[in-house]
Length: 370
Image 1 (cartoon, rainbow, N blue to C red):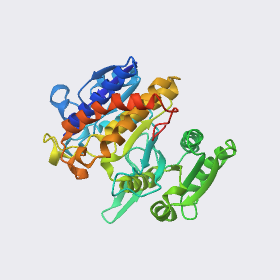
Image 2 (image 1 turned 90 degrees about the vertical axis):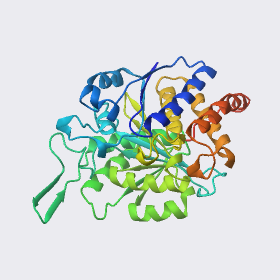
Image 3 (image 1 turned 135 degrees about the vertical axis):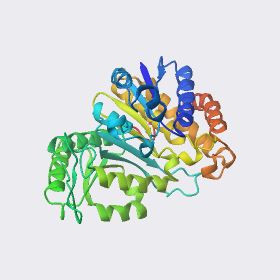
């Protein structure tokens, strides 16, 4: 089983190297038989290939079992006609990664975490209000005059149905509740279509509790009563906003995992950007991409009926929880003294201890089981 590593830009190589060390350690401890291949994308690929996303990388991504993708710095890329391809966006589109899966969990040891938070946002990834990805040809924003700008929201039954199925399947492996977020009272056609498909899917899962909540109400309830929610299915822009709110409630984007998944492919992504201001300074927190890499293992374990992969994902969660519990072993953004490399070494050292501990407990699920 081959995993493709794409380091990305600025802090990307530092945090993907850290995530790779963790993957290599669980590969050894659990005898997973994973192979890792690293290829350059983004600014590192541009002078060599005259593009930020070489064709060879696209081929390798399609052939790989999964992808680990570091953050990209699109604002530093040249125009598209000069090779400046949006790497994460292109990977999502080319592999049809229609589900952006974002777990958020409050760790008791993190002082800024909101108690009771343990949910997963399942965000539709291919359409909605995002003008860069919802048209086959052209762009979904237009400016007919200097003083008039229009944006087109695209919602389809097909995309709504498959993101709903992803959410309900996930809820069956968690606490069996799905909340659909919408503004159907105002966006009567687009959110009306989205909710029609989600309600129809809910009827096929009678064992899963279902509710609909309007987006403005959800923004408040998420903060005041996070324990009410398990799996949240949501359209693209609303999901982008509320998943970041949930991430902040878990302790910050540095602790936020993200998996972009489709029917046949998945890519682990950091939930944050490329942070050029701290690149190369050993300051980046690699937790997000480590957790995301664990989600990728869990996705592969579910897809291929490989419980060893899912148990390795649980081990990564367990090891990170153990390391983060000690303020002296946290990175600087969390108030600790460690840099990227020292933090990574602490997590790698903890993995074997966590694996031994988990071997004597009933099998758990990964925090962001997807």
